Image (cartoon, rainbow, N blue to C red; front, side):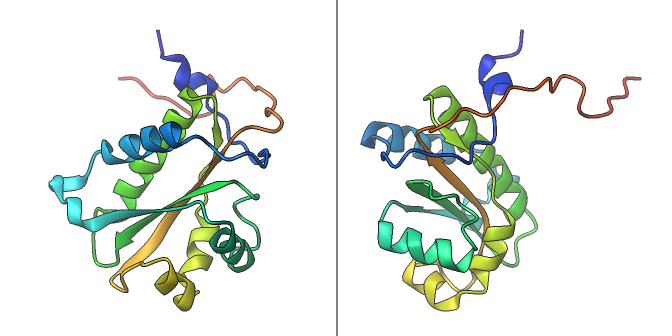
Length: 162
C-alpha cells in the first residue's frame, strides 16, 4: 500500500495568513536536509527560508506573486556549474512538500518564479545567495485556506512494464 502522504499531496495555492509553527518549520528543514544528493556533493545546494514579510513582498514583486502570499518560502539554491544541483533541488522540494502534507500544511513547486528571482541580483544578494548559486526551486508553505479538489491521479502518466 502506498503511503497516504503521496496520495494526499496536492498543489495548494490558497493559504491562510497564519504562519506555521517553529516545530513545523524545523520538521520541514529536516525534510530538506534528508533529501538525496548526486555523488554525495552536499556543497551544490543550500536553502534560504523566508518568513520575513518584507522580504516575501520583495519576492512577490519580482516573481509576479508566483508564491501566492504563502507565509513561508523555501528558496532552494544550487551551484550554477553543478550537473546535479537542479535534480537535487527537485528531490529536496519534494521532501519539503511531502513533509508539509504530513503536517497538514499546503505547498507547491515554483520554477518560473525561481527563474525570475534569478534576474533580481540585488534581492538575491539581500537573501544572502552566493553569486555562484542560482535559485532552482521555491516551495511556498502555509496553512491551507481552501483545500484543493481531489482528482484521480492513478493513471496520469503512461507506464510500461516489461
